Structure formats: C-alpha cells, structure tokens
Amino acid sequence: MHKWDKTFWMMFVLLETVIIAGNIWFFTPVGVIVGFVLIAIALARFGDYLLHKENKHRIKKSEDSVEKMKGWLNNQYQLTQGIKDLHDYRFHKMEKKKIILDEKIDRNYRDIAGKLIDLENRLNMVSRALISQRNAVILPDVIEKPIENVIRREKDFFEDVWRKITDMTEKKGFIETLSRGVKNKVLEIGSNGMKIRSEMTSKERFIEKKDFRYFWEKLQAKGKLDLAKDVNDPNLLRLGSVIIAVLARLPNVEHDLKPRVLYLMNENTHNIGTLKRLRKKI
Image (cartoon, rainbow, N blue to C red; front, top):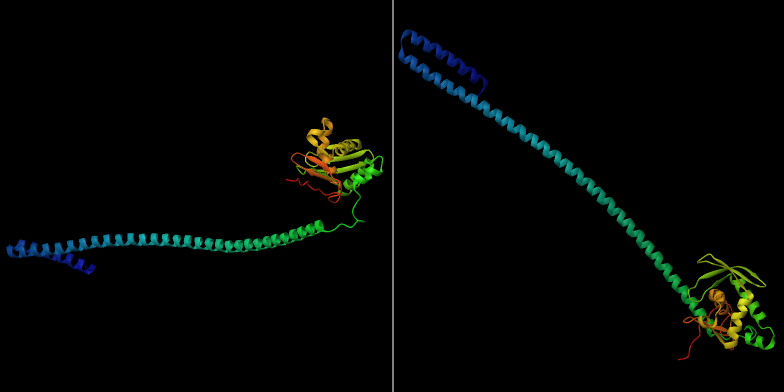
C-alpha cells in the first residue's frame, strides 16, 4: 500500500464518520449502516496496510540478516583463501628446497662415488705394486745379510741387532704393537735404551738395551719366543708387547698372534721395518 493510500483511507474513515454522525443527527438509519460498512472496509484496508508494513519490516530484517551472513561467509572465504594461498606458498618453497637438496645430495653422491672409485683404483695399484715387489727377484747386492751370518762371524752378535733396531725405530718414529696396533711414539734413543710414550695411555716408559738383549737371546737360543710362556719376569712382560713388535720387524724374524710368538728364520724373508706372519704348514 502506498503512503498516499494510507492518507486516503484515513480521510475516508473521517469522512464516513462525519456522514454517520449527520445521518444519526437526521435519523436516517440506512445512511448510518452504509457508513459503518464503509468504515469497516476502510479499517480492513488500513489493517492490510499495517500488516503489509509489518511483513515488510520482517522481510527487511531477514534481508539484513542474510546480508550479514553473506558478509560473514565472504570474510570466511577470504580467510580460507588466504590460508590456502599461504599453504600453497609454503608448499612451493618446500618443493623448491627439496629440489635443491636432492640436487645437492646427488652431487655429493657423485663426488663420493668418484672418490671411492679413485681410492679403489689407488688400492689396486698399491696391491699390484706389492704383489710385483713380492714376486720380484732381490738382487744380491741389495738384500741385507741375515743376522744369522752376523752371529757366526761376530762374538757379540747383539750389537748388530741393536744397531738395526735403533736405526729402524729412529727412522720410523713410532712402534706399533702386533695384536692391538697401539702406537708408541719414540721420544728418545740412547746407547743404553729408548724412551717411548703410548698414544693410548699417554704413559712414558724407558726400555733398556739389556731388555731387548734378554728377548733376543731367548729367541736365538730356542729359535722361537712365546711371550706368555718364555718370559717370566713381570716387569719384562709388561714391556714385552713393545719389544716383540720391534724384533718382529727385523728381516729374518716372523711372528704369529694367537699366541704371540716370534720365529727366527734362517734367511731374510721380508724387508726390515715390515712384518710377515709365519705360514704354518698344514
């Protein structure tokens, strides 16, 4: 209903009220009845107007609620879209980092593989060189004279042994035990012995020349020396692992580990300063 319709019907009710009042004044019942009917129609129309206004207000309120809901949903959508964009950005960065990391790992793998191949080639070259050296014929003027020959010619054969020991240890700089491979640094070599320091315990010890003589004479007398059985002196037994490690590197002395035994050979079987394990006949 238009706002002018409301004014019209209000004026209509007022007019009909005046007419009814005039008819009552002049005693015309028909006019009164018609007036009341018209007033009822006008009031019904006015009621429709009020009801329409109330419905319109409710519709407006509902539309406002819908608009608010739309605004809230739009905010939620924008928030969700922002979270999605952030997730996509982080995922993209992670994928980029993963690609870079995979490339770095692949490069490192190729580098390590190349180094391993190079190391393997070097080891093969060393192995071939050792095999060639082992199979090579040693010329008579290169090979050292066996200590046994020195024993036969010289009265004090140990002096030649001691000279070889001091030259060898001074040149090498350390003594490595046979069974555990513990290094002992040679600190000082004198005419009456040598001073060493263990790299495992950092303990310094002095091994006298006579201690080496004792072990050598035991070895020379029996042709072999069992450290556990042939050495009874506790003090010498504590130094025994170092002393037999030195004697085992003489060119005509071979060794075994279980048990630790030295064997005096009739000829030089390896170069001085190196080790050779005895091959037992089966």
